[in-house]
Length: 131
Image (tube, rainbow, N blue to C red; front, side):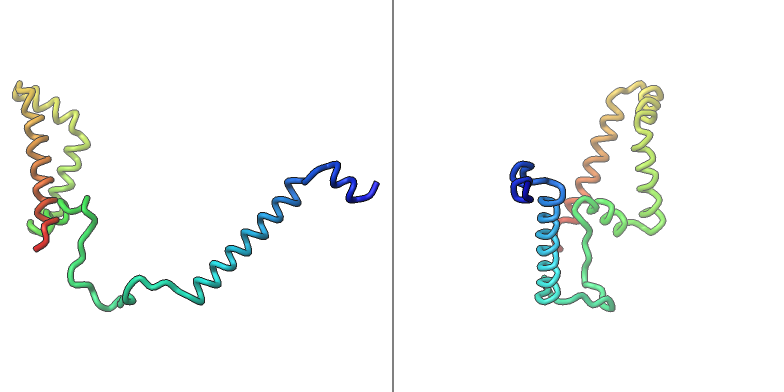
């Protein structure tokens, strides 16, 4: 039986035939992209100068409250108070229970949470407004 007849009987084999073809095509496209990236580099804007700091650097919007807090307060308070707040937030189920037992007022923890969210939202809005 000749080689052609055997191949037509067995069909097109996936592993050596199809996989090697796909690998060759993938390597060619990768090579083409690399050559194009070297020959025609993309420039978004002017090149960055590591010796010059930009005038004003702003963080992402979700860091605005913390950024505004650090700008408004002295260094020690600006750094350590947020750590205390995060610690209270992590332990909030215990703190909530303690406040309810100490004051016998079930709405006080909700009021504290609302005040905290108003403060965070206010700091975010104050930082987001352009000066």
